[in-house]
Amino acid sequence: MSEKKNITIWAKRTLSLLSIAYGGLLFFLTYTSLYYEVKITNMTSFVIMEVFLTLLFGAVMLYTRKQLITSVVGLLGLLLYLPVLILYYSKENLIFLIPLGIVTILIFFFSGAGEGLKTIIGTMYLLLYIICILAYYLYISIFSGHTIDVIKAQSVSNTQAYRCYVLDITDTSKGTTKVIVEPNNYDIVYSNITFVEKAYERIVYNVRQNNLDTQIEWTQNEQGEDILLVNNEIRFKSSDALKKEPAYNFFDKNDKKKRKLKFLK
Image (cartoon, rainbow, N blue to C red):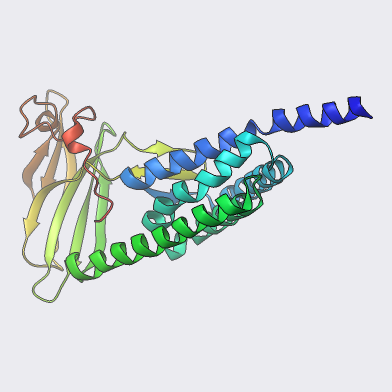
């Protein structure tokens, strides 16, 4: 009987290591929520994967809930989930956020930590969620302005290194038409979900009027450079993004100044 009990204990300790993977997943999503937008590219495949992972992590962590590793991950999970919920929240992402949130909440309440500790931490998390959500949406409502942004056209350069899109912005005045260039190779791409980099936008065309017939076209010169033509006028060359001067080096992934938090955009 004692031997069977020891086997069960070691089985739980071993399985509790999967909690680290779940904590790593939450940490990864916390990071990407600051610097990336998320797009589900294959809904059927994503749902199947999500159901599998949700059941796997949920079952394992509930089974090992009294193990130290699972308890620690369970207590930290709601903290890591907060920026994911706020920054990725949209109707399209509910299928992504709800199962993750359910597992995170269940693991917190059923973890092996003491009830007093969970009560204190849970109260702190509740206040933190309320304050952060209110502060974020207050900022959005007051400072971000009320505009409607529509992508009218988009295109990828010949070398696949850059992409651009025409952004039509409607506001209370004339509106704005912008052409924005981004690197096309900084995204994190998986088979059914893509994390799209959002920290490197470069406005190359900006007119204070919307609903314009703006034509964009990628071409190349004799040196093999990507060149973007906006209404037959050169607005961007790939060499611009390769210069070392700070004024030009706006796509350098190692330049931490360009890694500014643009999650409030």
